[in-house]
Amino acid sequence: MGFWYFLLLGLGIILIVRGIASRAKQGGLILVGLVMIGVSIFMFQDGSADLVANWFDQITGR
Image 1 (cartoon, helix red, strand yellow):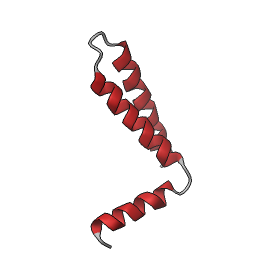
Image 2 (cartoon, rainbow, N blue to C red):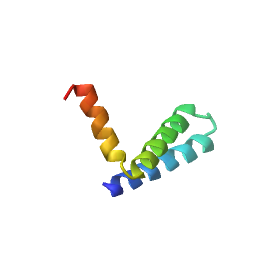
Image 3 (cartoon, rainbow, N blue to C red):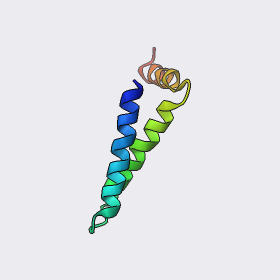
Image 4 (cartoon, one colour):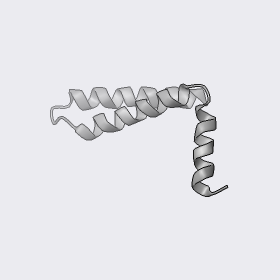
């Protein structure tokens, strides 16, 4: 799964760079890029998969 988190991190960086480099100052690209980077860094932490699994169990009521 680490490959997908690393890919998410790379795409987030690309979106931020494109958002900053665009002349229209596309805030949406920057925001989505920041969210993608935040999620990927969170998922790289130890125990994050268990934490997310617990959140999903609480949401579904299992």
